[in-house]
Image 1 (cartoon, rainbow, N blue to C red):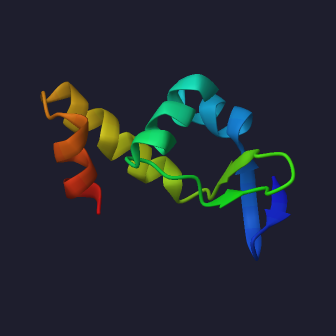
Image 2 (cartoon, helix red, strand yellow):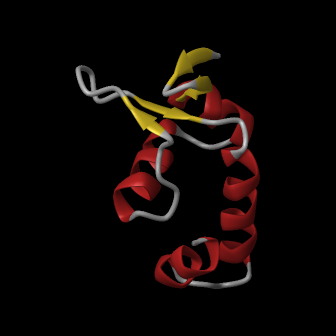
Length: 78
């Protein structure tokens, strides 16, 4: 974990491992506005996530398994 944006943050690769997904999937969800990174390094564009985002990711997966669209999930997680 690194200190970014005022708190302990997980690099996208570490967050992906915890969530059992790929960094590519997380970038897709970020770009779609469904699961936004908590901090993006302006110089490198590297994404960081708070440990609390794991629960949000779990909810996203749950809703996907129930058949909700990403647009519907975005509204549910807002």
